[in-house]
Image (cartoon, rainbow over all chains, first blue to last red; front, side, top):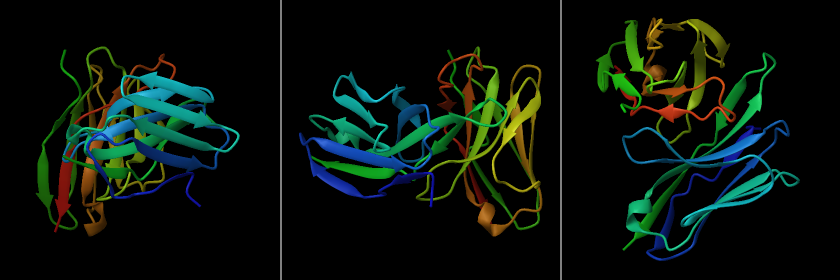
Length: 114
Length: 114
C-alpha cells in the first residue's frame, strides 16, 4: 500500500463549477499537508499548506485536513480554464534523522471546460 | 529574484551512458532536493543535500549520486543509464530552518534514454 493515495483522474468540469480533489494517507506521522499545482511541462508550484486538522482558505482555494480519517481535500470555487493542471498532494514527516521528508501523491489531472 | 533554475531542459542519452543534471537554488536557500517524476506519476524523492553533504536519501540505487557546491548549487549524476531512467528530473530548493520545509521547484530536465 502506498503511503499517499490520490485518484489520478482525469477530472473534467465546466467553468464555474466547484472542484473537489482528495488524498488519503496511511502514515499517522505526517505533520504538514501541501497542495501543489503542476502545469504541463512545468515544475510543481506550491498552492497551500496546512499543519493541523481543519480548513484553510486562500482566495478561491480551500484546503481541508481530517487527521482522524487520514484524509485531505482541496476545493476550488468558481473554477476557471486557467485552473486546468495536475494537482499534487504532498505530506511531510520527520524521518529517523530528524529531517522532514516529503511524500507526493500521484496527482489528479483537472480540465476545466469553458 | 531568480527562482530555481535547471539545465539542460532536455537530454537524450543511450543505455549505459552517464548523465549530469544541474540545479541552481532559489536565492537564499541552502537545501537542494532531487526528485524523479515518471509520466503520470508524482515526484519520487531521490536525495537531499545540505552543507555539501547528502542528508537523506530515497529508495534509489547507487547509480544515482549527487553533489552540492559551496554556493548551494547541485548536480545529479546517473551512471549506467537504463531505459527506465527516462523521466522528468526535478530539483527543489528550500531553507533548512523553515517549518514546514517548503520546497520550490524548477521546471525540470526531461531525460530520454534510448
